Length: 466
Image (tube, rainbow, N blue to C red; front, top):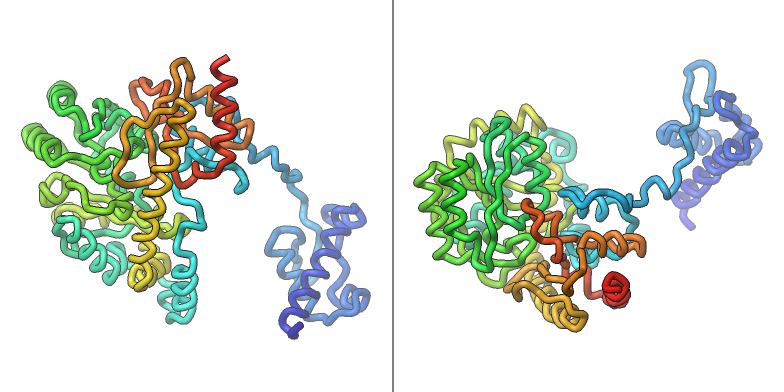
C-alpha cells in the first residue's frame, strides 16, 4: 500500500472516530471536539492527518470551526431515512408522474417507464478518456465562464451534424443550452406571454405539459397518428384557437415512436404559414435513427421552426448539454435571455461533449446502440404481445413502444401496483392532454428486456383483471 493510500486510510479512520463519538452521544451537539494535537496523540497519527480529517468533517457539516477556540460538534439535522426518498404511491398521474418516480427511485428499481438508456449502454470509456483529457486543460477551461452562445467548436460540429439531416444552419445560428429542456424553457420565456395558447400532440412528451403550465400557457391538443398529427384536426384547431406555438417531435416521437411523413410535414408548414404559427421541433432522439426522417426545420429553413437537440440520451444525462438552432434575428434576444437566467454557458460540460463527439469511437457507439435497440424492440414487442399488450405501431427507431393494455386494465392503477414492487412504469394519461390514454402504457425497450419486468407484469395484469 503506497503512502498516499495509507494517508487517506488514516484520515478516514480519524473521521470515523469523531462520527462514532457523536453517534454514541459522548460528543453532543455544541460540545468541543478534542484538539488536533490531543487526538493525534491518542490515535497515534500525525497532526496533519487530524487537520485534514477535521477539515473534511467541517466541509460535510459534521463539526464547526471557531477560529481561536477550536472545533465543535454541529447541531445535527434529523436523521436521514430511506423512507424519505421512497416514491409516493398516491401521487396523481399527472405530467410529473413518470419523472418523479424515475428520478426519486433507488438505483436497483426496475424502470421500464423511464425515458433514458441504462448506464451500461452509454459510452463510459469515451467519457473517461474525455475527462482525462479535460483534466489537463488550462485553468480557463476548468474554471471560467463560457460565452453565452457556447463553445464555438461544438457549435460548428453541431451545424455539420444537422446538415446530415438536411438542416442548414451556421454555427452563429446555434446556441448551446444546459439541456433540451432548458432550450424549450428559454424559447417559452422568449415567445410566450401568460395566457397564450400552445398546441401539442395528444399524446406527447409529458414534460411539455409541465413546462407550458409553468409558463401559464393555455394548452390545446391535436390527435396524433402513425404519420404525425391529424392534419384536418390540426388545421381546425389552429384556426379556432390561434396558438402562438406548436411543440412536437418529428424525428422519433415521444411516446409513440412514430415518424413524421413528408406529406404531413408539408401540410403542417402550410397551415403554420397561413396562421403565423411558430413551431418548436424537439429532436433529442435524432441519433437513434438508422436513416434521417423528414425534419420540419429542413423543409422550413429555420424560418418559423426552431430546432432543439441534446446529448443526454446518447452520451450522458449527467453531462447536461443541449442546443437550439433559430433564425439569426432571434439569436440576440435569446442570448440576452440566457445571460439573464443562467449567465455564461457551461464551458466544462461543452468541452467534455466536444471531446466525446470528436472521438472516433462515438459513431461506432451510436451504430451499436441502434442495433441493440432494434433487437430489444423486436424482443420486447413479441413478449408484450404474448401478455396481451399490443404495440400501437412497430417503430422504425428509438427506444419507445406505445402499447394498449388488455381490455379493462387501467394503466394508472397498474403503474401504482407496479411501484409497490419497485417497478416504475409510464401510464398513458401522463402523456395525454385529453386524458384519453387510460388503457395505454409507454415502454422503454432498453429498460424492459429484464426478465423480471415480464414476470411482474404477468402477475400484475392477472391481478388487475380479477
